[in-house]
Image (cartoon, rainbow, N blue to C red; front, side, top):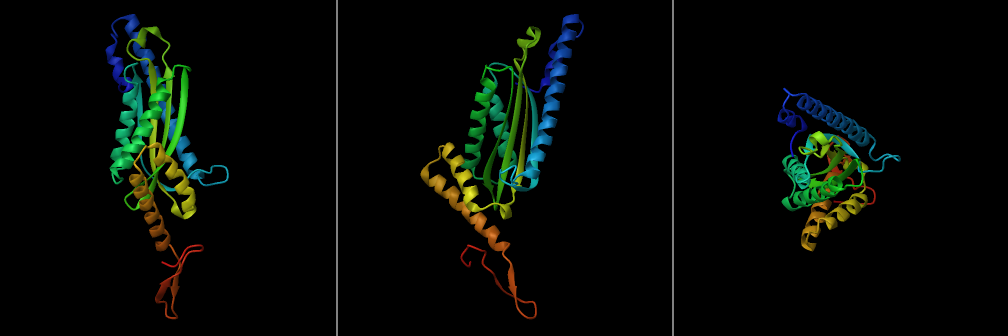
Length: 241
């Protein structure tokens, strides 16, 4: 497993067959890079419309980080792709709890291993997003992945699939999502991580604390006759803090 362009030097350009092989790999690299650029644009569009009637996914307020990969995949390296993306997740979600980051990383690894290991189609695209807490915020992580089965026999001994991946981290807009909606998504995700009951309860309590803290900090203030703050009014449907 490695960047597609790094394979170009594996073929001897002094021979006609080697030159053809180099051109094939170059074309695959360009295709993978184009897919990655398209995924970045598609994720950006999806995030802008998130929370709307036509896109009822978790809304965000800002994109915080992103990573892009293009890989040449051999038959014995499929599982390593998930590990690579999982490592990227831990690097730019470093403020999250280890067990949550590991859990999400495992979900990504398992999903990509199945996706890339399937032999039923010559090409495929996958998209998924995850939510998790990070410090005093809630973040959304979007993943898009693509692969193309290599048909050219002259290079199949070196690479069987070309692939592209984009991972984007965004801050969730807590002003536009009810906690019950977030809780439903988050609880289901935690269950898939196969965490212990006490770990799940702790994660849910932390999410509740973050959400309540955000709502209190954004509650309208009640001012006195000279502009002094008398109190922070309670939110509709919530008890006074």
